[in-house]
Amino acid sequence: MLRDALPKIVTPLPGPKAKEIIDRRAKSMPNGIKCGYPCVIERGEGAMFEDVDGNIFLDWIGGVGVLNIGYSHPELIDAVKAQSEKYFHAMMNITTHERYIELAEKLNSMVPVKGDEKKTMLANSGAEADENAVKIAKNYTGRPNIIVFTGAFHGRTVLTMAMTAKKAYAVGMGPFPDGVYRAEFPNMYRKPEGMSDAEAIDYYIGKLEEVFVEASPAQYVAAIVFEPVQGEGGFVPAPIEWVKAVRAICDKYGILMITDEVQTGFARSGRMFASEYFKEAGCAPDIMTCAKSIAGGMPLSAITARAEIMDAVTPGTIGGTYCGNAVSCASALKVIEVMQREDYPGKALKIAEKIAKRFNEWKEKYDVVGDVRGTGAMMGVEYVTDKASKKPNAALVSAIVNEAVQNGLLLESAGTYGNVIRFLCPLCVTDAQLEAGLDIYEKAIIKSLGK
Image (cartoon, rainbow, N blue to C red):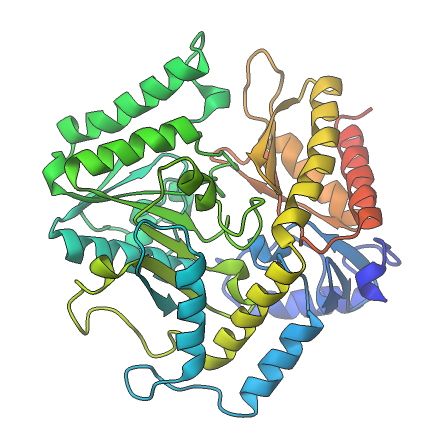
């Protein structure tokens, strides 16, 4: 079966069928929707997919975190099929459908936000979830501004492009909304030289507090928004002591703390949600967003907060035609059932242990491996020209990614300077597949270094 297969390349890439389809893509789709991978999927199972030329790939990108449960899970197929045979769509502003209610109830019981009574709004994408979280925070607090961070990625709507740090995602798209201010995110690998970790936390909290002096007084800030582990920013985890300090600042000034779990959610971190680590440490968020792996590939996202916050929203200002689509909800309910039954957070921790061991061996062996970091099975390797200078090495990352795909492993870069390779492999990957991927990856490093 494909789900148990190992990577196998049978034609030079792209193969003839793939090339014909990729050529058609270039003629029919905008160039702005970029893709540099020389393969066209035919079918996928588990962590593997076969392309139209019969090449078999191990996918360590997983639709950028969408496929934590893997490609085409049989139980999800059955759930989607059963719902589609009843009805595809019922807009919640017009006709209540129970799948939305069931999923909201399930998320309210799981999501680690502050408060005993919670409510959930469903949307379609991560960007929609983040934008609605900000709208909800503004409506609840009556305040106009938000604070985001360096390295952040929150989406490609006009508001979320303003929130996103890397402006390569926003070229030619301005002007952007006012009231979005940015502080420095705590990157412990690139903290000021000579600082201890404790001193660095104080430094980064000081940078956050400077925003109240130089950009927006605290009484005008509705929310502070951050990713528990930055995705596009280079898989940089938020240190727990920093999160505790942010929580204290929010409590002091009546600001809402929003965690963007679009990429970290649904077992990736070793918990169902990375914010569970924060709740365990006494610094739970007020609002949490999630998307990507929520429905195994069906379009869906969610915003959860305590009822007091959600019920303050002016009627008519949130919602949308496709929000909480019935087929997507059916898939999401099955995702949660399978992940809880089969302990997907536990799978993530076991995978993390294996890859961290290998990645850290590379850190000792290769001067170009500057840092290994992450939370659970959301792990990144940062590449530099040398350990002493820490100069970003995007060219090497590009070479590694291109070499790996030629041998059946899909990797993807991340980071402000494109010098991080991320790990987002489906959590159903087999041990044999994981080892095969690590071997291909290391060979790609060696070849890219010219050794």
